[in-house]
Image 1: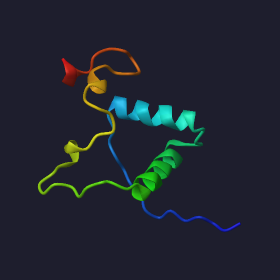
Image 2: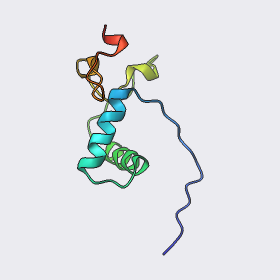
Image 3: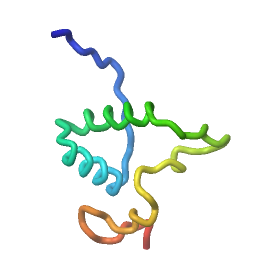
Image 4: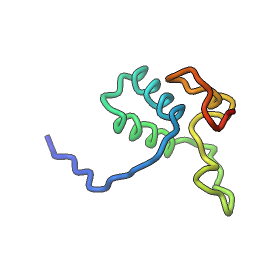
Amino acid sequence: MGVLSRGERLQIMLTDDELAALDDWRFIKRMPSRAAAVRELLKRGLAAEGFTTAKRGSRSKDYGVVEAAKAGANRRTGRATPSAA
């Protein structure tokens, strides 16, 4: 079996709700790690059709994992997040 080399590291910041969504998906799909789940979601996203080109001047904060309505309460604690107050 060949050795898989992953020489590049990608660091991203997630909200508590985004991390909970990732972990929920990971456990449902029985993925072995968060990194494996992210790679699988990235593979699926790159293969998906229908994504339009980003608008000029768009920023990282314009792209989230969970809808704003769902982000009102922290899924881990059940309490409202500061941005939803």
